[in-house]
View 1 (cartoon, rainbow, N blue to C red):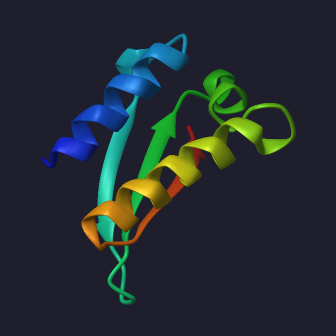
View 2: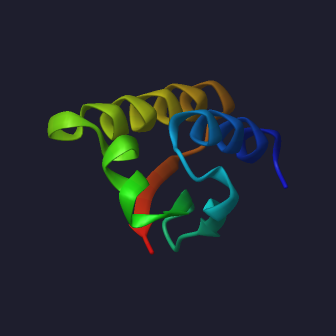
Length: 81
């Protein structure tokens, strides 16, 4: 488990009401990107996505900045259970 995975897990656990149901997977893609897939309870999906997608957009932007620093590409998707 990468340090970024741990940090992203901590942030997501603070955002949602059911942190025990959070599952965060790292999936390498064919394009060399690391895709983080967050499975959350259906009631928590809206909290991670945010109003008009602002929260998920902010999380993706932070991952983009982190990727630029590490010369990698990161993606983020939310899957509700």
